[in-house]
Length: 300
Image (tube, rainbow, N blue to C red; front, top):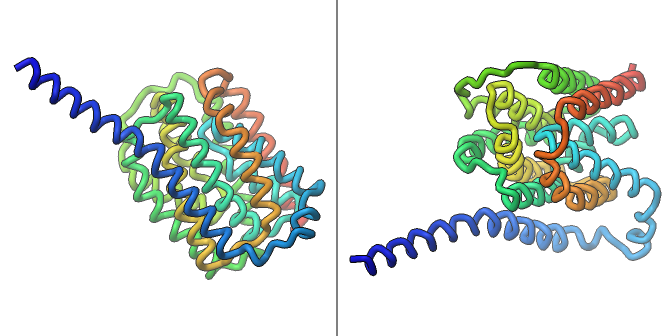
């Protein structure tokens, strides 16, 4: 009898262990597959001289944007898209290029972030499952519209205004006190909207989804880790959509963001429970507002 129980326990443990490993295996396999696909389809666009020439001051700027944006996103559960897009637009990068670059780079940075949060035990798998499919559907729709239907130059001022709104949401959440825990209803609707706005605006998954969940009193550690984990699928879906319908532009921007984001992702996951969130949220919100106002001033 005892021997039978031991065998069952081993089988259950083995099954759980396999499921845990899948949380690591799937992102790794997808990222390796993506790297191979990108290399195969775009190797002709790269030359040695072009590669060497690409290592200049601009690449360093994009790298630093990637580092900062990922530190913000990994510790606050929001802000990668809003922060990086605001910086890129302020730097003069066109909307379609910035949005494509942000989402292609996020395919890697969110993968690194998801693995890091999993490593530090910050993920609520049930929450991830609720957010995953609706978020992916929303992001694909938004990416298709921006890549193949909407004129990027026309919506550039609207994106800047949208970024200001996101920044206000971030600051508002930071200033909110005595949050009473409430049951979050219509998670799928929240995920669809967050995924859609993230693709169209170049950011929004975190500020919309994370801030809403935190505003409902959910545990910050698991909310941030779970939303970041789900964001990998959202970014992957929108990134693939951008590639299919709009092509890939701005390799220097993409590479800079990827390198910066992947390097800083483990540090961000480690810091998620170490830093004071409110001051950082306020600072990030103010920064995004200033950058967006700068973008608007150039357009008006």
